[in-house]
Structure formats: C-alpha cells, structure tokens
Image (cartoon, rainbow, N blue to C red; front, side, top):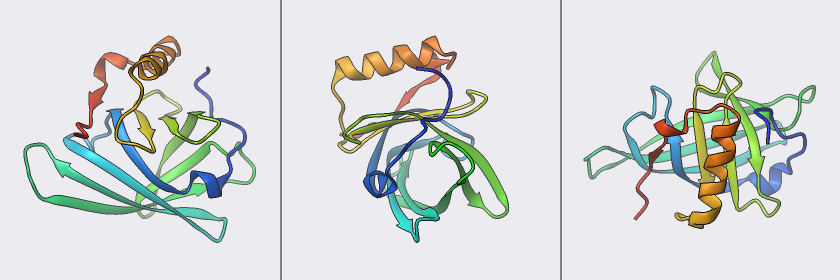
Length: 150
C-alpha cells in the first residue's frame, strides 16, 4: 500500500452508511465519538454526507452536513471534502476492501487518517494489518483514537 488514492471506485457501492472506527482526527472532529457517516450520491457528481457524532462525554447526538467532490481528471479515490464553502480539504481513499466492507481515508500530507467500516466493529487481525500498513507508509499511527462504538 502507498499513500496515494485508489484508481477506481464504484460510487454506487461506496454510497451508504460508514462507521468511523479509528482516526487521526482533524481539528473539526477532534473530540468526536461514535461517528457515523451517511453518503448519498448526487447525479454522479458528488456525495452529500451527513455525519452524526457525540462529543466526548456528552449524551446528545450532533450532526453536520458536508459534500465530497470527485474530479474526472484524477483517480477516483482523490476527492475533496467541503464542510464550509468555499474551502475544501484532501480526502484520499488509500485502501478499499473489494467488497466495500471497510475503507481507509488518508491525506496527501498524512495529516489525518480514518478507518471506516460498514459495521461498528472490525476483525482485530484485519485492523492490526491496516494500522501496520498505514504506519509503514508514514502515518503517525500512535495518534489513532477509537471512536468507541459500543
């Protein structure tokens, strides 16, 4: 595995519910737990993303909407996330299971990392393998935090 976006993604298969299991968080999601993202494909042009989460130690669920754009001139996994117009941040799909059961989202500068799956848990051996691959390509996996899906 390299720190580069995957070439081909079936956007219809990528659509749907993803549990964020472990992350090197951004400033925005630094204290989030139990994060779930719902991707809806819009006219084959972008994803509308609804993210639900709990702030550390708080019982109420919060949510935020964003968009995820793709570019026909780049690999499918090279996307840009937009939480606040007009700002976009790099969103690289660096690993995607053949059956779309898990995905690893990275960043061109290795600033953040997200391990997401279709279920709230992932096989511990597979998780260990994913984390080791990320460490080998330069991510600071010691900064990974659990999203605490119970």
